[in-house]
Length: 396
Image 1 (tube, helix red, strand yellow):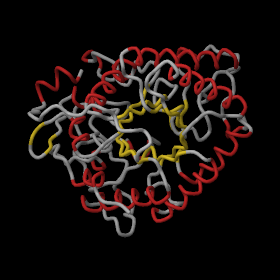
Image 2 (tube, one colour):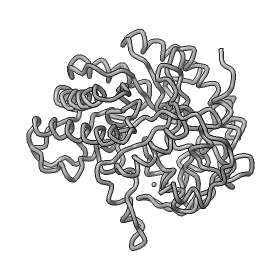
Image 3 (spheres, helix red, strand yellow):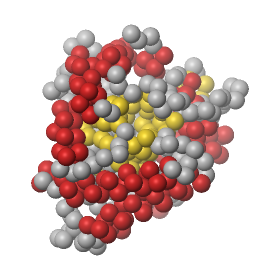
């Protein structure tokens, strides 16, 4: 997710869910969706934290586990981000902080709860202790003293491998792994100390970054070779207008091979070079050029311009896209329109970024609550919105 601080002002569930979530339904089919089918996905990285801080999710008037709500409405894939050592996610709560979020243990819980509902999982390695996006690719504190590219390559390989071996041993191997998050200019370069291996491709360091990415890919493949789940590997940039430039250079100058999916973020209110009606032909072009699956990894659209807390919202002040007002119906309509375009172009899935980031008492670096509640799939009382219906709609 690309955070814009100027407009920012910028969930353990098992026992908690027993207390808060009424669920009288029969056992679900916990077999994950086939990875070759079109994936309807949701990034639920905030859910555990929201639930721990008084967030409530409802479906048809009943308080339920959000993991089940998404499954019941057709969601097939849950995306979760992983930070290296996000100590700040505990520190922001001061003395009341009890745990980290988006670390390996939190991710383990999210993956287990998702798979229990029969949903596949995409694990998003940020390779940072905090947000990685086009403006920020901060180096983990544990790697700050690295000065040799070989050591960096080994560190990325060992970290990726150790994480996946841990999950695989618990029967939680993700069906998809994302190497880096919105890596437009690369990874591991923001505020880099002098002598740290240069991995900023906007400065021309394609070979260095390519070597790092290839080692991450090798780690995923090495663990997948020992698993019953043959994990697919995704590379990710923000805005479809950047896909051709990035993947052309990364596969030639960077020498990157062995990945399975071309991934991109598409926020239609921010990424305006390519309109919704052009998504199909754009995706078809990527598929033809790279002979890879293509997936939209992030998107969002507001259903209201109002907020439900004092945390300034990132969307709502913009002009709505023609035909898609900032209403519940408009949000559903644009999701259906984008999905039809993606299916027409041969894409393998669509993932909505943080549709469960509702208002609660959770904190991040910039505020308490949510800067995204007007983009969620839930209203300000926690009730499921019509947006969920796009996953079960009929498409050509």
